[in-house]
Image (tube, rainbow, N blue to C red):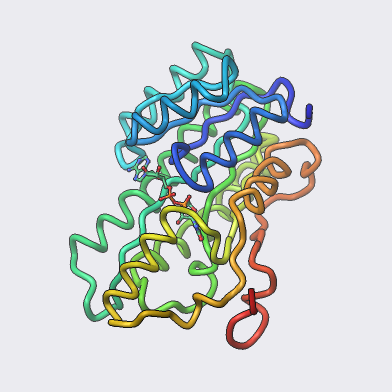
Amino acid sequence: MDRLTGKVAIVTGGASGLGKESATLMVQEGARVVITDINSEAGMALAEELGQNAVFVHHDVSKEVEWVKVIADTEKRFGRLDVLVNNAGVVVLADVENTTEEQWRFAHSVGTDGTFYGCKHAIAAMRRAGGGSIINMSSLAGIRGYPAIFAYSASKGAIAAMSKSVAVYCAQQKLRIRCNSIHPGIIRTPLVEAFQKNMREAMGAEELPFDKASQGRPDDVGWMVVYLASDESKHVNGAEMVIDNSASVTEGFVPA
Ligand SMILES: NC(=O)c1ccc[n+]([C@@H]2O[C@H](COP(=O)([O-])OP(=O)(O)OC[C@H]3O[C@@H](n4cnc5c(N)ncnc54)[C@H](O)[C@@H]3O)[C@@H](O)[C@H]2O)c1
């Protein structure tokens, strides 16, 4: 109940799926959480549901100027920033030969650019707070080859590499700021449901090979976020935390 008492966190893309669950569990564990998203309706409803330790701020992570404002607002409201969860992400369904420039830039503007701006501006605020934890949402797609989601995979790979660079930079600078990436397999969220629907339509198939595969629940990722946000993970830095019920270390699909 009090694993995060006293900590102040920002969760981007916090109105839905993994961000929503992470924000909910963080509040449950005693943190004060700024939920940010471009979906104001869902974000405000969640903040209201979570009570006085949660607020919603409209925030497009692809715009650096908005990051400056969100972090300043957080410090003004709660006095500090201890945890940033760079969670917002968008999937583009296209292989390397069929990815348009627009699709490539869209996936990177939210995933890669958003995570870069978040790390950059959170470090300054966490330095003022005396330390912190940056948690970047990558994916199995950032580690393995998934041809149908080329731009998304490239962005998730960039996020994994960025996380290690930030981790080492902060350690060398003695900032007491840690940075880790999380690599979920398939977790049932609105993003995955939309992706599976689009895949079915694209393939003209009733059932997809991975429909019968093991799928996690949002709290499987949310509890990892709580762990990385807490001081329990004080010696975990620059790590790739995989949450996939063994999908990345076996052949084929792990049965549900
Ligand atoms: N669900 C999975 O199986 C899975 C697996 C691996 C990685 N991930 C990653 O986890 C993260 C969350 O995914 P999810 O499944 O909860 O998706 P989701 O679609 O349920 O939630 C994503 C949220 O991000 C918000 N968002 C989109 N663009 C934004 C922007 N420019 N600025 C701010 N917010 C924006 C959306 O409004 C939405 O609320 C993503 O980075 C995704 O790539 C998910």
